[in-house]
Length: 277
Image (cartoon, rainbow, N blue to C red; front, side, top):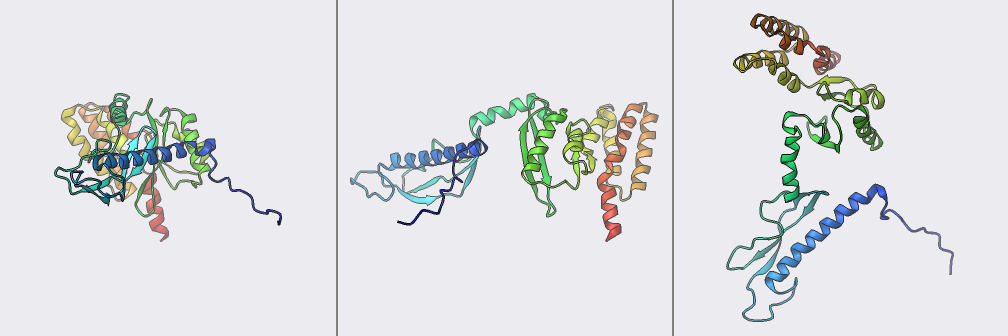
């Protein structure tokens, strides 16, 4: 016999790095098998097995429905519900109801996230989320990690992982001014330009005003956001600041002026790109 020259592949070996993915795959296979067993119990016969008695269930398997994503505590899996035809009543799965998209545990978690401030954009005790806007207009979730929103170290860990996974320096990073991500960017992606989120800025400015003035103020702020040039945006800004002072709410104007240059990073880069074209 010749000497064996090939080596066994260890690509499927379970290690720490792929443990969670392996567990999620096993959970997916287990739930799919439960769906198959549910139909077997309903019809009293296995797949491709003939009816054993005249009075047995008249139903029969009819392939599968479209792939469905199901969110569990361990992550999101993909399953296909077996279809059954020929029954006197419509078949309803007890394992995976018709319109279910997440488990009860995940559904209970969502209100808790809101209690921690998710509805207000405050992720202090909840999640660090990174969403990428691609050149073709698509949005992709890159990271969903627990952490503290003001913590530079928490954000640094997220960015280190993204860099390790192959993400290049972002063309622009948009976020709230109070996030720890700005300090993390200096450590991981020092060349990434910063853009303050206009939505957060508008909410912060409106919080400085009474409700009776918020509608008018919002219209002023939108004029700034959609200005075609930096000069027109600055003119609208100055008008808004004067209006705030005249109404007796100077702090609202000061809130707008804070981090002003970083509010126009995207506009400046867009104008620069168009000038170069």
